[in-house]
Image 1 (cartoon, rainbow, N blue to C red):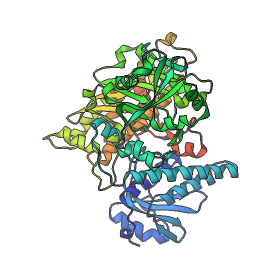
Image 2 (cartoon, rainbow, N blue to C red; image 1 turned 135 degrees about the vertical axis):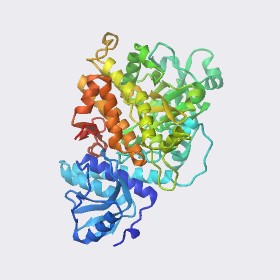
Image 3 (spheres, rainbow, N blue to C red; image 1 turned 90 degrees about the vertical axis):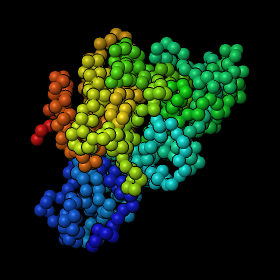
Length: 575
């Protein structure tokens, strides 16, 4: 059997890699490689020998209680599990093996294996299997759709970077699932397809608007929309409520909203204001003229959550922003800046689900001159399918090198600068003030100047966890605020979102360029943490494991709000 017959198309190879790596991480197979002397099944021994002779690392991944395995080879091994697969694989067992031509059979096998292995009653296991399989297939179909050729629309550099994520989270099997969007909706609203649009505005009677602010100011208003709605705002009886166009259509189909429309308490004004750009999170949009992000409600399931704005999440985001405003010295610095939430609006209704469906959160954005240099890190680190260009990270490294040689020394110098604008200020914020930001790759951004990291940014305060033990102004926060956590919970979240999801992924991507090894960068990171003398930094370098969110298991068990966790080996621990 020749590996030349088993070539996966580039997009399918990346999808198989994503699903393979996620399953391995969450089922305790951090190193799926066969040992050097391990021959493997008799029918595959010659194939494995051929792969080894080509410098590849064969693997045999069993799917418990199904009788099936995935056989293939790694072309790159990562200590955190971000392995690169060679572009071929076999699926089967015993003496029956079939080439894997696309990712769907692997997704189906993963769902079946979890149904067999998880300890659920048979009927529950079947429901979970069918649900996960549906979401995974939905996600796969969308990734394929996003890779179809399409004309490139002109976009601001920041919007182009935000909208460049076509595979999504590397350790997630439903990273591009959109339940509720049809093809026309994708073309109109999907960031992956370069969408831009105007928001739908409602004129709402003032007594029906529920507004909260983080700093006492009124919610910022798109002046272009306000001018267009002047006749409704002139008397002071109405306020404007922005809404995603898809959500506006959804809301107008609800009897409760139709009743408000009929009695004149709510007036649909249609699309108004400046053109907005949906970001990598789909429902958060960027208003460049107003230097604003709006976190809108969408009653569709994206990944494994319905993306509206429940009152508790809005309260957490605003409370976290208020806490940060008490610490002006950390809200903005030369190396790092937090983009806080400013305010929220929704309809004053007794039904909490309806309030969540109508809510919008206003978030500070960067000034336009800064935005030209800012890139969301998830897009910087996303490796495209083969033949579709190179990872943006490598472009930045070449810019940083300039006329110099792009080698290990330069990458290590670049990485030292990166730590100064990401990990180190985030760790100081938690160590000194107890504020743990959910600075994963879609919430973290960096401004690059000539390819070098110049300033870090963090956004989306809804995921912030504030340690009751460390925050110095606890008297200024409501005792029952959902932003308050125990020290252990806040530190646990910091380790995952900042260290594992963000820093570990960035190191793995640098390692995949072939310019430096992950081990070297982890040693540099540990040395920088040790030099800080911070007790938490020292703890990070010495603990045996780090926590990782188990997105696959959580999706199967349908417990997204209370996710499962797994431990992965700490690459900073010298073994």
